[in-house]
Picture (tube, rainbow, N blue to C red):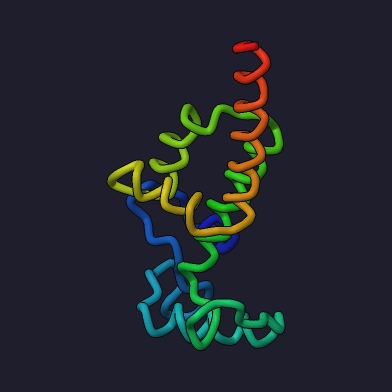
Length: 128
């Protein structure tokens, strides 16, 4: 967002900033961010699929993490090796907080079960 309105991107800079008038380049407050997000949600016609009354900003982070792990699963990436970088990227203090996403989504559990079945069948063939 910052680079779109011409503000220099720095690690300590605000993620959501004003784009015009007196608020240009200044951090947006929580109320403004949630108001704008609500308007975008309505304009995009997002349907709520969760337990909350509407999609939340935090839900975008959840979706990102789940999709990334699913892509890694499909690509055969070693999840244990990649998880630390993902955990750092999303700002989790503990990698176990990121692993939680794997147990929270049925699609993830199905992928994990499939990989385990493949592993178990290979192990059984080697034992015979």
